[in-house]
Image 1 (cartoon, rainbow, N blue to C red):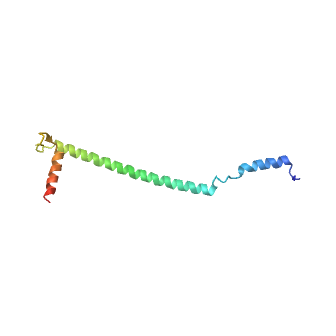
Image 2 (image 1 turned 45 degrees about the vertical axis):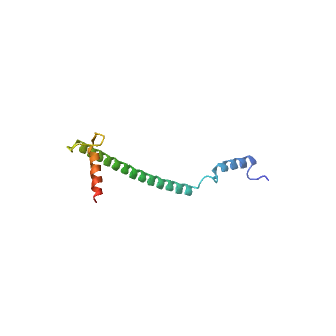
Image 3 (image 1 turned 180 degrees about the vertical axis):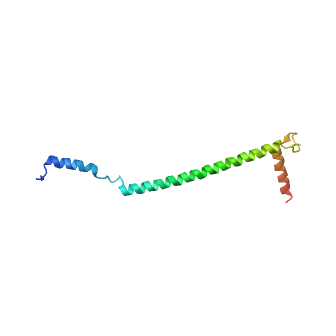
Length: 108
């Protein structure tokens, strides 16, 4: 049936113009798109917080490691009496501390 008000060519042009304006089912609505963006933004904030916490933990671990290395260096440079093991080699002060702690634990 031919529409009397619109010639066939004009109806075809109108239908062709209307087709791209219809949202395909795979494309979310504007409301759903905004909801997805809010969810992703929230996830990004959560991940940034977790990353910051992990970075702080690594930094504190590095500070503790530097402190312990300095403590070992100071112990090795101190004037502790030298002690030799069964092979005739001198033991470091760090080994002497472990031996002393181990001996103290045996008497508890």
